Length: 210
Image (cartoon, rainbow, N blue to C red; front, side):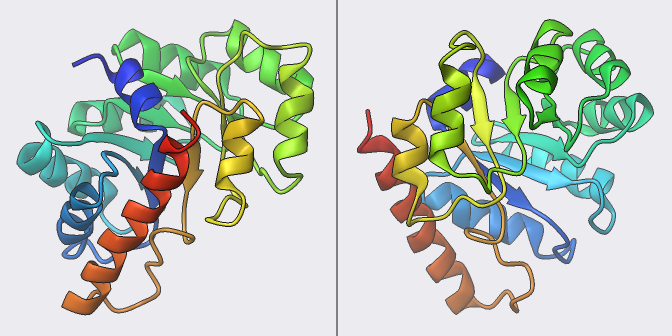
């Protein structure tokens, strides 16, 4: 499986932050049922490495697992060894990019300004996470003007009301946190049904832009 191609094809990266480790597999299955097959488990969640390993072992042939909020190369290495096939960061750390690539994983550093975005890409970032994306779709369109060669993944501020506009502006996909996976809610059977339905809505929204 080509991980980069899979991310570009899926377009949605679901961010699972702060979930109870016992609930993540259920959340992953509900997302997969809804058509969301790229999952980011953040490193500032409880027991992230064991969760990555568990989901990768159980669902590695159905979804691709990434590690998020990776701030240093040591964490990137540990996450890849646990089963993560892509590494996301909120910032540009060149050593983290290098370590990620050394271990054969896809690198998605976070950047905001045109200078940061270009630097992240020139230093090996495969996709650049535009974070935060609070300035809206117009900002993505503006960045795409002088830097059309760089794949952009807006994250932070994307929801059902604006995801189509982000895609029309030239984003290759979007990272979705609490707008899709609200880990503050209790993970009941009803929650999982609603999560699957919400995933389907987001998938429909990005596919309608094809």
